Image 1 (cartoon, rainbow, N blue to C red):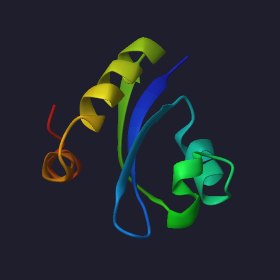
Image 2 (cartoon, rainbow, N blue to C red):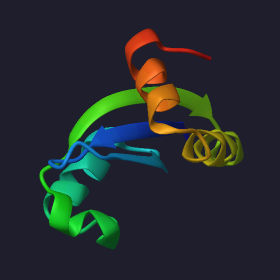
Image 3 (spheres, helix red, strand yellow):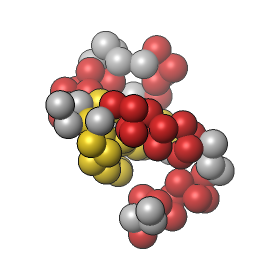
Length: 83
């Protein structure tokens, strides 16, 4: 199964990072209040970054790494596609 790490931008301009094996379905779920509870007051969300990671473990490790970054580093990743 293919796994991705992704970042969505919320309506309040905050960024949310997650993992999924189906990007389109996950963004749809977020926007239809079937995803993360923490996003429900920040809808709609817009996909701004996705990266194929291979397996779920690799995607989860990358998600954890990105979640530890400050906002500017995340924006640099989105714009420049940093590794």
